[in-house]
Image (cartoon, rainbow, N blue to C red; front, side, top):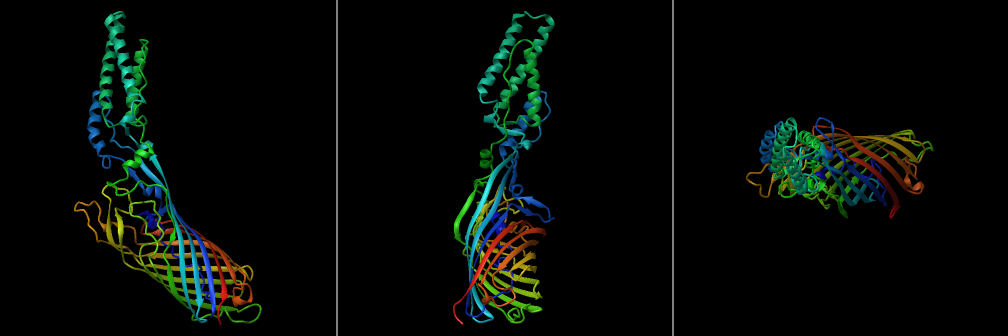
Length: 506
């Protein structure tokens, strides 16, 4: 489910420009990318950490034992003359997650003519998911009963009983002044009542926590009892109620068959092939190649049209492993791109890109729940037919050439993702809490990206690459800054790219 947060960003191409190798030239390229996400943007544009997305309140809805305990706890508190405790909850569990894909994209492009080229890209990918369990103990009103009454419950009740027996012996001896005798008798009645109530409490599977309102009230009454015994030089053991769940206990309650997931934990896919691409490129116009004065052309224009097929050769994220980033997307794509470069003089250069990614249907297994809250009772795995929404990308990159070889640029991109469609292929339980169509929530969205790049080109950017050693290096950074309508991963991308050219025929 969360592996979907690392679907390809809208600028999957290694280079955002309209360059293309000349006839007989072979372009060799490699890009190293780090794509990470630990937040997402909600339909109203606000941010949500993945820890909040993977949060679940352990209340009676998820822990049925609490539902049976509440009436018993209320009766015990009523017998002790205490106010009714609030509804039981074991707290809120959050899985703090960072998803990351590290890619090495290897590319080859061969110029067949001055206007036609063939290319392929082979990504080598390592998907990683880092997770840690956080338990919000401030919201927990109950904790495990076996951890209640300190480390030695038997010793606590033995000490309480011994103190009560000593007071009872003192009253039976009738050695106290009449007024003290009466107070001691009242204190003894209170102690016996509290002992009985605590005994009933000890039989419950979960107990009030020391930090809860109910726990503090009970501890206050017990402390008053201790002070009463101290007035007769008698000691009672200290009362320790339950502690909140540990991370391990919380994990056990939020995974398994009832939730359809494994316990979220650090995961790595290992190094595998991602989604391999093959394509064809046309360059119908290129006045950047004109040879002229040293100052270069006053106005230069070039265009590039790409059509590529992306094979679903990568591994799709495992459905029941919320921290599996995967190495691919699980389906084939047909992507069309048009890039337009225009240069004014030798200093200013503008690149424009329009891309349309037609994502094909595929059949795969999915965790059926809701994207808004993946960890829920009743989640299950089944086979579905997935028709991903198409993706339209528009990008603009204004560039400034500091010299013939060094270029800096800004990047702004707008991405529109159509609504995904999910249809059951495998069996769906007749009383299923969720249907495959629930997965469509938040898939339709529009996102904005902002970034920058710094490029060094050993050859003059406005002229033929053959005049110098044909090597180019670029460092770029981009991230999602805004989104609307859907659930959008706030991806952050760092990329380092290198490309070289070698003439193999003329």
